[in-house]
Each structure stands twice: as structure tokens, then as C-alpha cells.
Amino acid sequence: MNLSLTDPFVLAQDYPESTSGSLRSGHTTCVRFNRKGDFLAAGRVDGTVVIFDVETNGVARKLKGHTRQVQSLSWSRDGRYLLTSSQDWKCNIWDLSTGAIVKSVRFEAPVYIAEMHPWNHLMFVVSLFEDQPLLVDASGPKVIKSNLPSAPKRNQYDEDEPISDKQAAQDAKQTTTVSVFTASGEHILAGTNKGWLNIIEVSTRRTIYSTKICTGVVIFLRLTGSGRDMVVNAQDRIIRTIQLPNLSAADLDPDTIDIEVEHKFQDVVNKLSWNHVAFSSTGEYVTASTYNNHDIYIWERNHGSLVKILEGPKEEHGVVEWHPHRPLIAACGLESGRIHIWSIMPSQRWSALAPDFVEVEENVEYIEHEDEFDIHPQEEIHKRRLDLEDEEVDVLTVEPVKGEIVDEEGTSAFRMPVQLDLIDSESEEEFVAVGRGEMRRKSPSGQGVDYGIGDEGTGASDAEAKKKVKSRRR
Image (cartoon, rainbow, N blue to C red):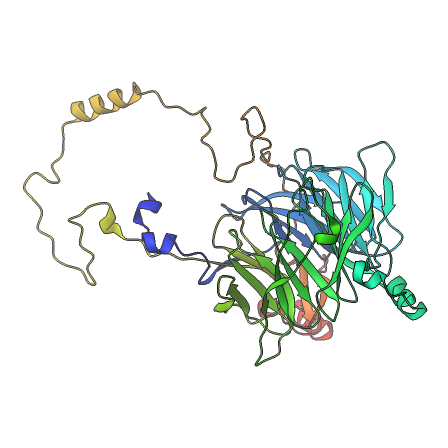
């Protein structure tokens, strides 16, 4: 019914217009939609992962297995498994049907980001702080960690000239800051701290192609749903979009691979840096959150122009994600930890239900017809109810959902079970802000008094709060 009331021109809009609400469960540091778009995973500063239902904005499940801040999230293709990486140097693979940890892998260095294989939920690639990236295979009884190269591969034109010792030493010092799988899962795209993009073959774990795409550190990489395009966020304050070649071709020659930058997006006036970038559901738009600024920028790729600057809460945003099927953007507030939502707020046209319906700006006296509000006899009302009871209502057939992943037999691959025992869930203000970037857990022995809590998390100091408590006790 609501769909018929909506203006069709509003439904055709591809990007959101204004803020439409927020989600909160603790202090969120990162978010990620699943492939179907019905659930949003949120990693918190205390290591808890919260799964939100996008339609109801309710909490579907809470996962507790980390002790430090969650760094990254990665969903499996069917939405059943979730890979989480944390500052406690661990990566966990969760089975959301039971809420249990399938595999937990600990590393010898802090984790930058971890990305799950698109077709094997027990394989993932992880980028480590000041260390070589690892390809982790947890499908067997023993977890296998394979080192991946970070040094770029010189092409055939560079091989004619011998590499100097200085050049070799610089290549050896390079570290991988971010790495993602291609859509087929046969190759890994890795960005380094010197601005190089390496294409690594998974089967041989060797670099088959390298190119320098920027001058600074490659901060983040993200592919579209089809895997044909990639967006790169770099330290030089320029966002780049790249069209990837078909790396799964049978006659692929690494020497013929040519990767060129399609568009460059930047703020020439304000020279803003970008915290996080993401593609739209169709890949036609690129969105980014700004450093030390509260605006969300949206560019379109056909002409490479800026189409919208989303304004919302007056706080800086970190991770920003675009819904896989709808014009909806979710971003994490760095200070409050809230998940702010931008979407389209359509105005309903009630005249779509009845052609003679007229929308008026003020009340108009209505003259009723003679038999319009007649009271029918009780026998006739009872007969209508009995006739309605004879109708068969189908409550077993499940209608297909847009974007739902189905297996070869045509059945749904996975459905999140309904969680009814979320009694121990934390309150919204379990962690409160006591300063810029500083969070503290609420004191349990306050009998309803939260020290240091004011409006929107900015309150008085602990000493002032204790004075208030003493004055109340007197």
C-alpha cells in the first residue's frame, strides 16, 4: 500500500537526500551490510558485534568474542557467516545460525583489515600492521597461514635495467595496508604504504602485476558487487575509481594487464581528506566521509561530478556504507558512536488510491450522503464474518525477497533465526562520552545516577557529578 502512495519519480532516485534516523547499541566503530541488505553488522569499541535488522531497526543478534575494538567486518556470500577482526590481534569467523565462533585465529601483529573469500567462508586475507599480509585457510583441522608478497613486481621494461640496491631495499620495506579478493576469488588486490597496487594470484601466492596508483599510503579498497570496478582511498586526498580487467580469462597474460585510473574525486577548495569510501548499489555513485568534517560527499561516475553533499549530525563520521539495493547510506559517528542513516523520505500521494480524492490544506465541511453511514443489522454483520472465515489464508508460502541468495535447488541459502533471549543486551548509554574520542563505561553503583552524563553524552566531570549525588543524599 505504501508503495502505491509513493511518487514514482522519487522511487527512481538513486541517492539519498536527507537524514532519516539513527541506530545505537554501544559505541560503534565500523559497519557493513550483508549481500541481501536485510542486516547491518556493527562492530563496537568494546569488541561486541551487533547485528541490526534493517527493516525494523531492532537488534537481531549480539556476538561477544573480542576484547578490544572491532576493526573490520566481512560477510559471506549467503549471509550466514561473518568475519570480524579486532585490535586484540584476533580474527573470528561466526556462524550466525547459532551465534558461535567457527574459527578463531590469532596473529603476531595488530590487524588492519580482514576480507573473507567470496566463495569459501573458511578462507580470508588479512593485512597486518608493519608485517606481511597473510592468506589464511581454516578449512582443515589446522589453520594454515601463508605469507603474501608486498614488494611490487617490475614489468618487462624495468627488467632491462638492473635494480639498484637502494631500490631493492625500498621495495623490501613496503608493507601491505589493505587487501581484498576479486569477485572470482582467484586473485587478491593489495595496496601498499608506498602507493602501489599489487595483483596476487591465490593459487601460487605470487604477484603477477604491479602498478603505482598514488604517491601516499593506500588506505582502503572496495569493489562493486559485480567486481568489475574498484574505488581507492589514498593518503594524497584523492579518491580514484578503476575499471578492472577480466583476471579470470583463460588466456590471461600478466604482461598485457593495463590498469588506468578512470576518475579522480577530490575537494580542490577545502583540500579535505577522506576517512572511508564506498560504491552505491549499482556502482554509478561513490560516497565518502570527510576527515575533521561532518559532511558526506556523493559523486556520480558518468561525468565525474559532485551531485550531493549530505548534511546531518554535527560530528565527524568514520566508516560509511551504502545499502546494496536501496538509496540508503549508513555512517558511524566518531564521537557519539551512533549509526546515522540517510535515505529518501517520500511524501505519500493519497490521490493514487482514489482518483476523486482531493488533498486540502485546511478542513472543509463535509456533507454526508443519506445512506453513507447507515447502521447495518447485527444478523448481516454476523453473516459477513462467517463468510470471511471460510476463506483459506496461505501462511506457509514464502515470497521471494529482492537480492536473496538461492542455491542450485532454488531454496533460500540462509535465514537469520529469530533471537528472543536478548534480555542481557546493554542499554543505549552503556558507554558514554566524557570528552572528544574518550569513552567510559557507566558506573553500576549510582542507583540511576550516571556520572559525567549530560545531553548527547557531553556532561560534567566526575567530581562535579559526585557533589550532586552528595547534595541529593542530604
